[in-house]
Length: 239
Image (spheres, rainbow, N blue to C red):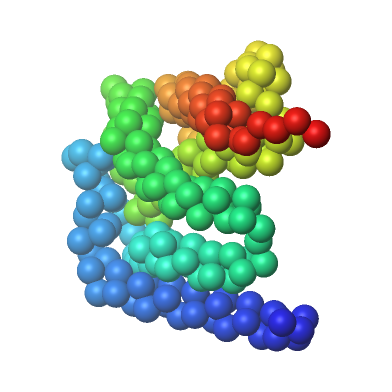
C-alpha cells in the first residue's frame, strides 16, 4: 500500500477505537452509580463528601471514562493487530498476536490484583493510622483518583513479562543476562513501587514492588522456555 493509504488506514482504526471508547464510556455512565459504589467498597464505613459544586458529576464522568477504556481495550488491541500484522514477517506474527493477547490478560490481572490486594492493604493502613486522633472524611474525587490510578499503574506494571518475552524472542537480550541483573531489578522495582503508588504508605509500595520482582522472574522463565523450544524446533543442517 502507498504511504498515504497506510495513514488513512491508521486514521480509520484510531477513529474506530475512539468511537469504541466513547460508546463504552457512555454505557458505563448509565451504571456509574453502581460502579462508584463498587469502588467505595474497599473503604468500608468511610464517609465520602462532595466538597465542591459538581464534584460528583465530574467524578462520574471520569469513572465512566476509565471504565470505557478498560472495556474497549480488547477492541483497541484488535485494531492494532489488524493494522500491523500485514507488514510483519512470519516470525514476528508468531510473536505479536500472542503477546497482545497476553498483554490484555495481564492488564486485567493487574487491575484485579490491585482491587483484591493493594487497595485493601493501602486503605487499611491509611484508615488505621491516626484513627484515634482524626475522623476520616474523604473527598469522593480524591478517593476515586487514588483507586483508579493505583489500578491503572498496577495493570501497566503487569506488562513486564510481555516486554521480556518480546526482547527474548527477538534475541535482543537472553534470559541469562536478565537473571544476572536481578539485583538491579529489585532496586528498580522498589523505586517503581514508590513512584506508581499514589499513596506513600509502605505496605502498598512493598506489595507492588514485590509483585514487579515476581513478574520479572516469571518473565525470565518464559524467555528461557521459549528459547529452549526454539532450539528444539529449529532445523539443524550443515553449511
